[in-house]
Length: 107
Image (cartoon, rainbow, N blue to C red; front, side, top):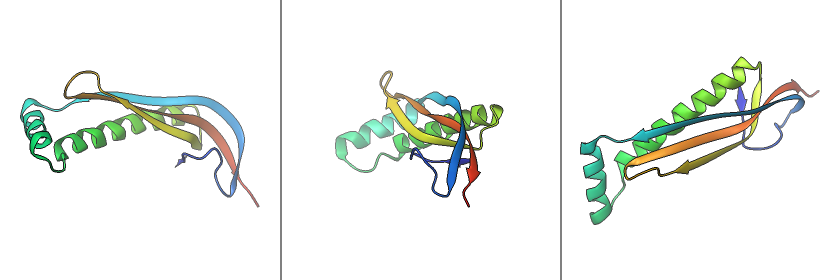
């Protein structure tokens, strides 16, 4: 599966657009990590606890999007975009979406 944020894939042509696929997840850190992250926000420094939360959330959302594209028989996803929002303190929603397509190698 080729996944790109561009509208085209170099060396390939899009032969069919199958539709928009998306994945999303809502994540929260447990109380201990949320406390440590809150402390870091006061004293400064890299907030590893929240970084881990976002990495896990992006991974899960991407996996869901790819699974949907594969169900539709897609060979690639183009125009991939990410969106995130905070639902409440310590929680985050991550959404990823793009267009599932069939492709053919040029040449």
